[in-house]
Image (cartoon, rainbow, N blue to C red; front, side):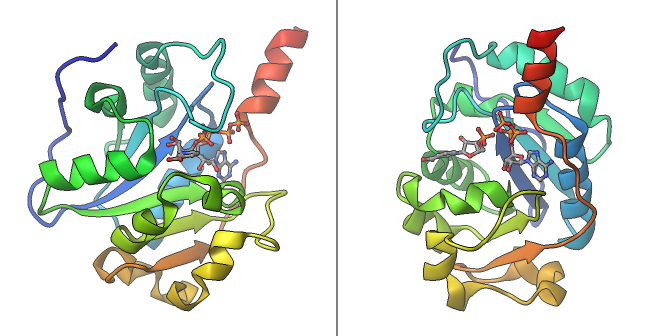
Length: 200
Ligand SMILES: Nc1ncnc2c1ncn2[C@@H]1O[C@H](COP(=O)(O)OP(=O)(O)OP(=O)(O)O)[C@@H](O)[C@H]1O
Ligand SMILES: O=C(O)c1ccc[n+]([C@@H]2O[C@H](COP(=O)([O-])O)[C@@H](O)[C@H]2O)c1
């Protein structure tokens, strides 16, 4: 349900990774990606943006944002990871809208979008993805089973890709700019966890 927009603290210059997801359910893979992003991108915070519903997914049976936020907080357990349901409060479902709204409200924060490599493959189907890539640096974290081959948007953005050694400066780079991070990997997925629960 839409409520007041309460943003986590964001003093000027704070380097904030925005990690959007369905988190249905949240798992240790989400936490691992966040820890990798914090360290490799030299971020001050990672905000988990619990989505009201991925516009490209069937959201029937998706638990409420409040329930997923509560579950995510139990998994995140880190002073620099902040779990928020602010997308719902903003009335934003498309990432381009979320990013625009956050930039308006936090003009002095340095935002980086974070996603797993499986999402890069479908990025060209996101609403206004070119605008999003032109306005916000983003980091793609390697994921078992995901391949960059055939990632249409990644090809279009080839010239904007930073070498991995430059990851620490991504938050300061002028977009379009992105980096692919190879690090520890987790085979966990929400799909597998939902399947395990339904079989139990
Ligand atoms: N094990 C993982 N390794 C790397 N990235 C991950 C991993 N799990 C999730 N992500 C990334 O986290 C973000 C949120 O993912 P989401 O909440 O949909 O979890 P998921 O496990 O991918 O769920 P589902 O299986 O339902 O698609 C996405 O950018 C996704 O790519
Ligand atoms: O804006 C879009 O068109 C869009 C399309 C697909 C996914 N997203 C966002 O990508 C993030 C990851 O989604 P998910 O379901 O894979 O966790 C989440 O924040 C979604 O809102 C956004």
